[in-house]
Length: 478
Image (cartoon, rainbow, N blue to C red):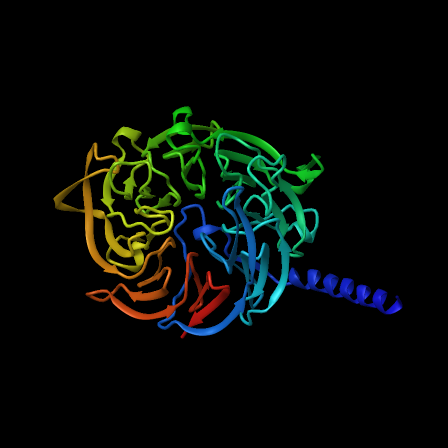
């Protein structure tokens, strides 16, 4: 008993020392949310020239319940969207990764060693968001991770309580609150999206089809139904009544909100791109597509949106829209790029992941990259058109301009998001992750690393970090 008590005291002392040491150095958020920030268009500072294995860490595996009819599945590693978050503490870099073994993990990015892990009730799919709470009452709350999961292993849609969205201390790995995601007309109560923090207020689209505005401070949370839950400030419904039957209750919002000026933009699985006015706290812009939409609304350097479109519930092809949200929804389409369908798993075609964009200061061209379920990689100049080509939209009703295509290659099916870093492009898919040099003509493949990927990579200081469906987390570089 004395030996056991001594071990407990040593553990407590170690934890206290670590907690104080963790924030005794300057903390800097490198990648604090999915695709870097409010534009969903930052991916890292410098990319390597090779994809050699530097280290790998086994993330584990876990079971998830699909439905009463389809039973359970066992998944390994991490998947969509699954982009790692990066944090610097002094000279050390750390990774936050949601995993299919039901844990959110903090890893040392230099060694791949586990620092802490927090257990959810189910597999963790989406990417979290880290908030620097500058007026926090203590160190534990100074940096908070907001992370979602699937609804809970062994649970079903009609269970009374589904706390699938949570706040966890970055410093200690301890839970600060949990949100009970209520049942709606949607057939999901998971949380895959990454929230956006605006003036210390949390904005997120939940898979129950509700755009939720939250006061994230733990001091504002109250005990409700046996759980410490955050204060909900307002809500907006991300579907229309007719969508319920048309989409057979697939009203799921899996995307992450982006921001232009005083508006947030979010893609809904109900088939809409909604604009949420921060001044009036209400939706005042709605572009209807009709398909399922999984990717996020990506902001370009000319303040437009790139929207990936899945082939589902539509007569035409999925693909990519460029929209100008400064214009009314009936006049906002700049172009459409249709992608021929090719079924893989439950997907019938189009684009599942988000679109990647470069920064013109790093290139002579404004580039956008996307990869289809059909395995084809496309790179276009998103501010130029092919004057010889007009195409039908996703419903085969309207015709639109077509962007200038500069490169296309059949590589492998993917639901990941391609990422640009200076003149490099990194593309992950079900067979490999590939590194390209976009400054050459033609575009040149520099290297590839073979493994199964659904998640999106992140890059920092010539290192590529990405989780695989084979169970491993990889650090790749020169």
